Figure 1 (tube, rainbow, N blue to C red):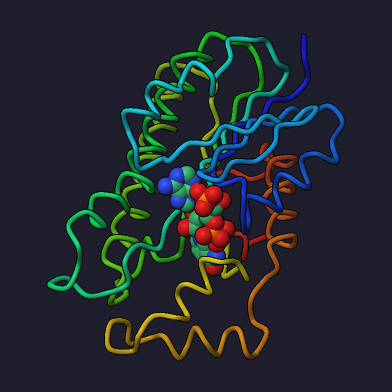
Figure 2 (figure 1 turned 135 degrees about the vertical axis):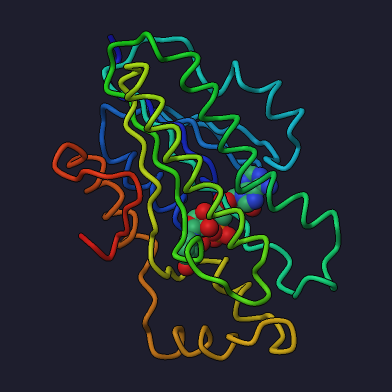
Length: 242
Ligand SMILES: NC(=O)c1ccc[n+]([C@@H]2O[C@H](COP(=O)([O-])OP(=O)(O)OC[C@H]3O[C@@H](n4cnc5c(N)ncnc54)[C@H](OP(=O)(O)O)[C@@H]3O)[C@@H](O)[C@H]2O)c1
């Protein structure tokens, strides 16, 4: 039996890229990384170039994403996320409304569904980590799609754990709030106009006052969580708690 398979979305930048670097340090790990950018596959790393907002293509790729091979550990990390078009309702492009929910909720749901379908009878250690956000529990102007989609992701994760327990699927689910990280997503947030996002100055200050975690620091926390899942109960977790 092979050792560990990690399936990770959003592997090209930010937290996802740092996670790939950390996971590659483990010689027992094979990784399937997914993002829109073309990246070379090499050795234990396989890259799938896929736009998660293209739901039909995602469904067609499921066979490649979830190989029916045996591993000691199978882990899906739904990390890819989009802050969305930062503007209040009334100014949003309908396509952007559709896309943020496709990327932040529909794609993770389809991937979770397929993970459970393919691996439910496997005796491997099975884990799904959904990278959520503190915004799931807050109302932030200009971020309607982001707040709503991360709240939906949290609910999706809670229901998935309930079902896994009820039907004895043996899958551990976590929706993890990763804190504020110095990634391209934060650059995007800082470049919003104050007319469309009243808190833009606060986020600019987070950066100028060095209050952001590095992607590598946050990736360390995710790895710590993966190694210590048994001692960390609950579904909705926050890196600031450990
Ligand atoms: N940064 C923060 O402060 C912060 C705070 C709370 C929560 N989070 C959450 O943490 C996760 C990682 O965020 P991050 O800051 O690392 O974001 P990021 O820097 O914007 O990177 C996002 C990643 O997702 C991929 N991605 C985006 N849209 C995609 C699409 N349509 N199809 C396929 N891949 C797509 C990107 O790759 P491509 O561009 O190559 O497609 C990239 O690899 C997200 O779920 C985010 O919501 C971040």
